[in-house]
Length: 350
Image (cartoon, rainbow, N blue to C red; front, side, top):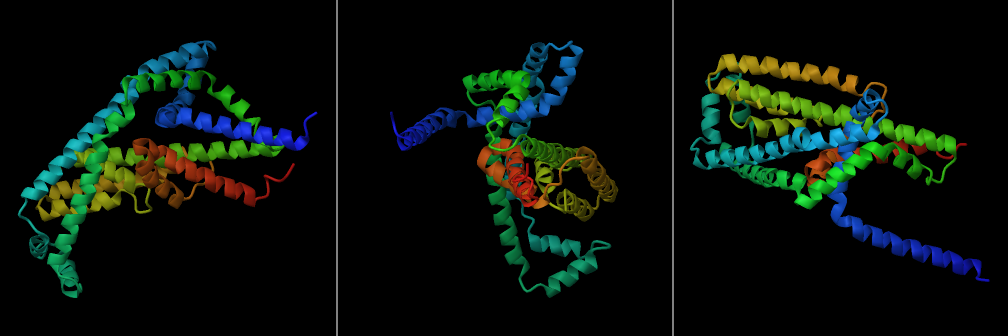
């Protein structure tokens, strides 16, 4: 007979070896698995409706959605990535050719109605020169845009990857749509908790996920889309670039106004008062949309910190590419939810 200590050591070593082996196998596939999981989560409500219409044939519903995903989901995102990179390159090219400097802009703004007096007061009271600000703005803008162009150019490749990886993602998507709920139920059984608190925890984490994805991320994407449309309607350059910037800014408390307000001021500066008024009204409508859309999408869901969503989105994009826009906020939302859940003392209750 073997001792209890020996058996415990054997189990620990075996689990460690198997864990290392599984990590080595899945490490090159994390992006593929991540896209499949995110798409399965987003398409799951539609999958349930189609399964009902197809009289319970879940395989048919999952197969149809998987077949349509490359055309209606992946291809548009990849196309936007290419357009984004191209428009950023055009902005950088125009900036290198432009002879207009920050001091010139201030001089012209002095004569602009409404804001001219405020500009003169700021210029006289500022402890730094206009030439210094010009250097900072130009250098900082070019650095950010070059990084954005590099990221945007790799979006299509990051989404599609190799041909084998792309079809593997579709293969995983089919099974996650068809069997994802059953897989999740089996995994939940391994959580070392009593059934009641375990069910409460899973339900709470599900609410957090839906609140982040459909509340914060979806609202930001819609705001960015309408911002880009507004730029296109008033014939401002690079609407896709500024739509993406507005999407990221939507995670901040100030929202997409951080992109729209400078655009309105630019139109005023150019003397295009009709376009400036239109974009100002359009921007106000986007802000009102945020106030109504976010509560509607997050109705009856858990509250998620704005800071966690913003930091998660920025850090997620840096770590996982465009996929991190969803994964980052969800992961931080999970951590915040677990802390709140533990603080309420539900984890330790029966």
